[in-house]
Image 1 (cartoon, chains in turn red, purple):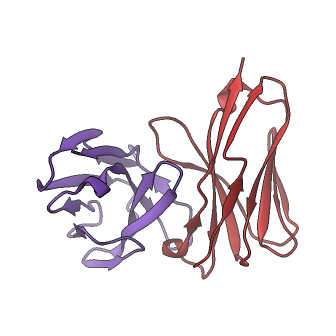
Image 2 (image 1 turned 45 degrees about the vertical axis):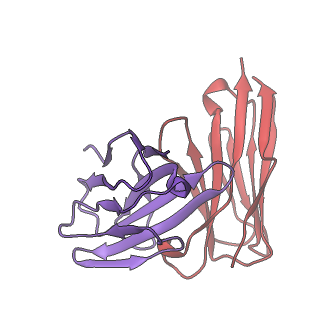
Length: 112
Length: 112
């Protein structure tokens, strides 16, 4: 069974601060997805990283896939209250969504 | 486009009762999925379908049943509800088995 460990589990910061959350595994994944989930809603895909060492930027969010494709990080610059939510990573191995392994998530609160 | 629509949003069941969680999508996606999300546990796949008439078990199928008579609809049936089935249930769809998941906004179910 493949496991994805996310850290920290909870993070509360002030508006304007920077932060990094992590997604780690002992298994290799073909690709890794990051989702954001707001209260009362379903997860929404932010990005998919596929190549080891890949870095993708989405405005103030920077996603990195580890060289060995076992870990990933999400860095947010100058966090805003609108960034508040549960950040989930999901690893895929085998080219099928039904083989996705989800992490338990990092709950981020950005205080104004 | 409404995307993925789930009903009801909330439901309370007594132990032993049964119910059907409804899921419909208007994106003409062949692939549909049911997940459950428990606090601190991430998303677990219950059942999935690769097209009308075809369903298969995910990681945690016990106590649930599904059917897929049309492309649009993928209902999840709970027979003999148990407290362990208290959870938030998410339906998702995708164009292909490797393409991004589109989630509904969930059904919060409490079994007492």
